[in-house]
Length: 352
Image 1 (tube, helix red, strand yellow):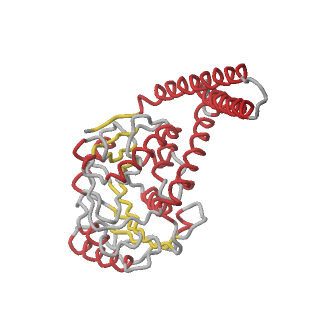
Image 2 (cartoon, rainbow, N blue to C red; image 1 turned 90 degrees about the vertical axis):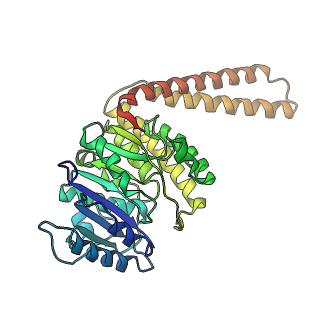
């Protein structure tokens, strides 16, 4: 327990044979459950989890949990009972193995469902590759335990020192995804959305639709959108990253289009759910009408250029009208963003 709060750690692992065991061994004593999910690795990750779990059980006092069995999960189902054959543990470690590779989001979802079933008060996500400083975990838990946030996430961009430690290609990609996620989620102050070092309260997990959590690397972006629709408070916590010998399994050629498409769909869903269905705010109309006017202006300008090049005469009037339409559309979009920022401002905080 951490300050009278039960703590669970969800640890997705895919081909992390050389790292996952050390992460389990270094887990703080106040962590009550460690959900170690082997996402159908092709190396010795599963054996490494079991070996580390036995070592942890022999050195960490445990309560009423005993035995050595496993949770085997499968995809395409909606509840943990359907995903699992047996839920037991080796001490405080709960080994979970997917029958098929479900992706990072799928592994996180399995762990979240297990934490919900166990009634854990605060659930932390920790990568199995050793990139996360476990001594920083209390900084993620404190906003939740103090009642100041429902979800806390690490942010490697808040501090100049931490930004300097990030490889340049990651920094550029992170900055682009931060901007896209701000628009999609409505959390305009939140940065570093790809940071997987997070903590979430039991109430927030119950409020969001965990069953439909995105089962790919964009799960953390998807989660922010779901949290915003439920008016959950998010804390951005300055956090260093640890870069070692691990290799990323992200294939950027498929990652970028997949996550971008997901964010667009989530943005439209958020506007409909939050500002048209659950409540009403004209900012949704500003977004839709502004985007339509701007797109029409661009189309009209393009047709004007084609007409001039084809020698069909002057297109001054049409071009001017298209420009005015474009400017009016952009103005509406900017007003929509300002309204959106104001609506979520009270839901965001930063911890440096």
